[in-house]
Image (cartoon, rainbow, N blue to C red; front, side, top):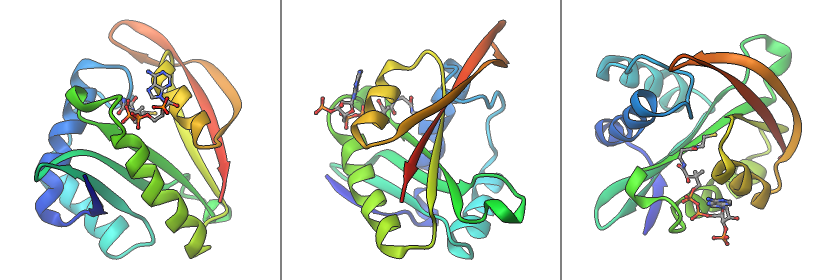
Length: 164
Ligand SMILES: CC(C)(COP(=O)(O)OP(=O)(O)OC[C@H]1O[C@@H](n2cnc3c(N)ncnc32)[C@H](O)[C@@H]1OP(=O)(O)O)[C@@H](O)C(=O)NCCC(=O)NCCS
């Protein structure tokens, strides 16, 4: 397995993974598939020009998962915090891909020193994501109840925080 910075050429594979979770799960609160143009614009603004990251894990030459950082909230006082997300292809979960991604990303964030706090916002239930984040020293800071609504039901969201 190789973990590396994504290039624009990876965006279709990254989008394919995310699209699965958008359309079939409540893992993400997005309900609409992002267009290729939106992926490119976000990549250019956040990663190519900005301080954020998009890392991919490649297994046998194919993108099998990715992790990205983005603005936590747009107001300037939040500029030293970021939001993380991580998605492993559905047929690849539980085989160390997520660990390889965070194993590359978190030390890099710590070494860069640009950000002070990382947040993951986990839609519940998601025992795998909770176990995974706790394994990487994220701490549960609170849960909003029924903040989301997708697939005809209300969903809680848990806020996990990690010092960088
Ligand atoms: C959550 C996710 C990123 C974890 O990545 P992964 O590649 O499946 O996890 P790994 O195999 O690298 O496991 C690393 C550690 O995470 C924890 N973990 C993984 N799966 C778990 C599960 N089902 N239950 C509890 N803990 C789990 C364990 O501590 C594991 O360490 P171990 O193998 O030594 O026990 C991945 O399962 C995924 O993409 N899930 C669907 C999308 C999603 O929920 N993304 C997160 C949105 S907040």
